[in-house]
Length: 215
Length: 215
Image (tube, rainbow over all chains, first blue to last red; front, side, top):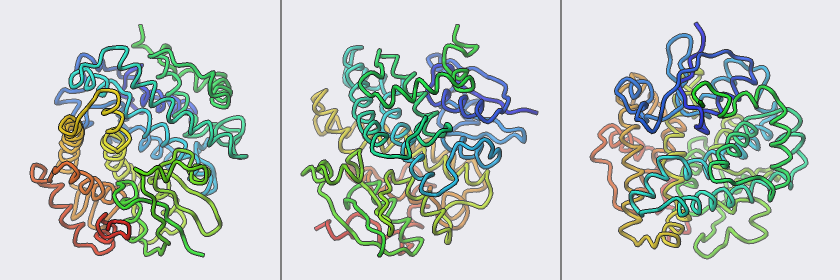
């Protein structure tokens, strides 16, 4: 039995998890869902994941793990090498904080169901959705750039010279930003780290266009 | 030297962290900030916390830790007893997932700066803000109630019979919901657990009205 990844190619949380699985050298079966068609709102899917969100990781012993960052912490505990968290507690706190800046202050505000809600409640059209999306990216990327620049713990990647949880979150968010043509030029440290990440085959293989359902 | 908690009484992320500190029996100095007055947007505060958000935990050795859940993981590693995470990896994955359902799918959508943004970009008045806020609470509390009901690991609290990270997130969110008069009646398991949590002095002491700046 191998791991089974229930996900969607364009989902940013799915991209994070694919990058983490790849970096840890873990094989998985790829199970695809079309969010717009409601394929994660079926009774069968909701029994695995009561939120009807992607990703869900089905383990070899039949557990269904949900919430991408909780899943990555589980992977870290069950498959510790190579590690995606530093060895020291202060380093781990920094990496988790950088990760949560993205996972908590950008992504939840910008995902598909939020954009739909803006459309439904406030008649937000595509330009208004872009303005909203861009606002939250800029707000947190400005802070993230400052945090990365302020610390001598920033290395080749967000923390030191090996990729961590923060990097898989960053990589997925930069991909997600392309939805509204947001590049990285105005954040030189983020741009530099993203360019390093793109050169890692395990990370690059997690990119949305490389997935089987990206056709 | 003791811990120094930079926070705001009504902040939900601050409430989580206060509950965790209290449950672990850790003393801290309480430093208050008025968010509406921009007191977390000063150069001095931004040097501690580049996002200008609360809470920030200043450690005895002068580190500034940010992002409430990253701080609680740090507390867990440095002050492991009493533990706010189960001993088994699957249990920890469940507790983190329940926590992140709240910390990622409700709170980031409903905090003050988001309500301000809705007002500024979409002219959302108080009733429209309430509709938005309530929508996201219902969406995730429905899933959370289902997740709690579906598992025999749910006990007196969200996971077993001792309070965990999930409980401090739940407790803080139920408090936050009072802003728009959202109670817990429609979610009986959540209501039951909240009532248990209110009986724990360490948790109840973290409630917004009990803080020095709540006057």
